[in-house]
Amino acid sequence: MDKKQELRKAAMALPTDPGVYIMKDHTGTVIYIGKAKILKNRVSQYFGSDTNHTEKVRQMVSRVDRFDYIVTGSEFEALVLECSLIKQYSPKYNILLKDDKGYHYIRISPPPYSRISEAKQKEDDGARYIGPYLSSFAIKQAVDEVNKLFELSTCRKPLCFRRATDRPCLNHYIGQCCAPCTGRIAPADYAERVEQAITYLTQGRHKLAASLRKRMEAAAENLDFETAARLRDRLRALEKLNATQKVVQSRVKRQDIVAVAVSQGVACFEVFRFHDGALSDREHFTVDPSVDLPALRAEFLRRYYSLRDSVPPRIVLDGEIEDAALLEEWLTQKAAENGARYTVRFVYPERGEQAQLLAMCRDNAAERVAQQLSMRGRDVAALSELQQLLGLPEPPARIESYDISHTGGSEVVGAMVVFQNGKPLKSAYRRFAIKTVVGQDDYACMREVLDRRLREHQTSPDDAGFGTLPDLILLDGGKGHVAAVKPLVDSFGHGIPVFGLVKDSHHRTRAITEIGAELSMSACRSAFSLVSAIQDEVHRFAITYHRQKRRKQSTVSSLTDIEGIGAKRSALLLRHFGSLRAVREATVDQLAAVKGMTRPAAEKIVDYYREK
Image (cartoon, rainbow, N blue to C red; front, side, top):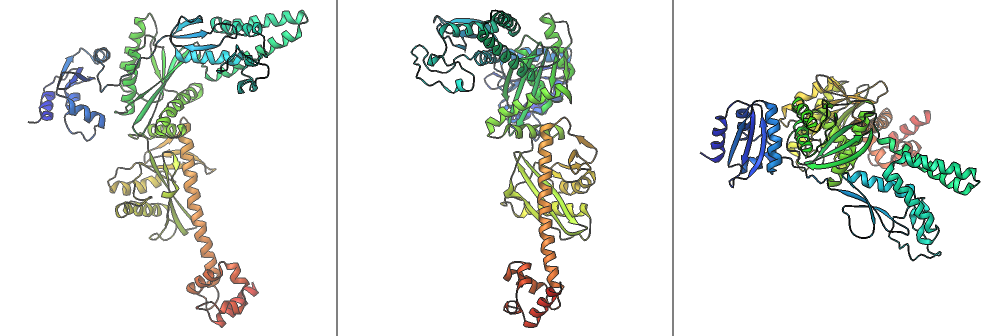
């Protein structure tokens, strides 16, 4: 009996109670910890068929030498114990988030011409330090704000050895530096700016604004209009900064927003943390998407809040989560341990302010994934949204879309466009002249196109268009098209998902449909933009081919209406003269000189167009 069979036999002997299982390698090191509602069922799945396992799970199972288990009284107790054990052992194959929340300081360098910057630790260098603070994001944001608001120096130019003839850096010309490096501001005036910046950092913008307004009014009463104007400009800059920050404010005072973006084996979670309605912190974590999204979200939240003392009453998520009720109960208990008296709830907004903030969070996660994959952030976000909307196992890297075009059942053509990682792959576009369908039958035409395309994959594996199978097929049509085509696609055994693109009365994308129902895209802004672009592109490609065929047929028909001129002579004439207009303007001698033509036939062409 090999090791896997031995482990499966041991797993089948486990109790059917809830509990925690602990996987170990041959050295006794804990490599994975999980919880189960029914221990026997969950653990035995690891050592059965690995068809549905991800690569990460296969690797973990191949390293398991033995396992232990702990029976608990309920699934909730198993969840609490799992979180505690993972924190204790840090197993290799669990999601492990590095807790990098160290202390941060704001540093004010010694005068004259002090600089304000971020520092990770205090040093004995004569500088003044404000802090410590936990949030590096908040510190970076605050330092950037005060340097721009008070036009303080941030460049590396020396400030002590200045000359009036020196040229200031670019920051001065865009209104973000008062250029002390050129002596354009006196040390006392610069020191005043620094003190105002420190007031802003330590006491808040509201107290600073009140102080500036009071000083401005006093200066105006004393007829010191130059000082009053300078303070007025500072107040306006402060108000403008405050208005800009409202973009990331929320009517909900305290909440966390969590979104994930997944593409090509890379997943990134972005967390926005709001306090008093303002974005106070943001974090991101790159993880291995080794399980489906609901399970991945659940595991991430368990790890994330295991490392955080603060749990808000509201957590906004971008999709469904496994064991939601259990996690809410655990987080509520964790919040109560820190003196909170509220119930933690998960929220899944689809519209309004909260949906917009969630989209912003998801876009930031997508941007970080895109940086790793050399893709555009909006493409990663769109594919991730499309995956969640359609319930796909992973984001569709290659999407093929099909459309049929004709005029009253004549000159029927089909078109195939390909989008790779959210971008058109024009080298893979293909066109189809319909061969087996007579008359106007879009469903039959679509079946012929897909049948030919999938058969070409078998016969032309090296073809740029047909050689690679898609992760998703989109049909320009509704439920009828999907019902007509899906059985054919399924018969090839590739498991390619098929959906239809529904248009409104203005020929614009309205929804995605499957055989059962329509899927609204109102809450999926990025996916909607991508799908609309795909539908517009396949329609353009199909109708362009149809118009070419119709124009060619119209030209040939014009010549073949002439007695003695058939399809063969029409083709010879068009090839020789290049266009129908050149044929119409040719003389009898020029027409007769064409190989395959006779003088009587040439005379009939000239007479025909003369009468026209």
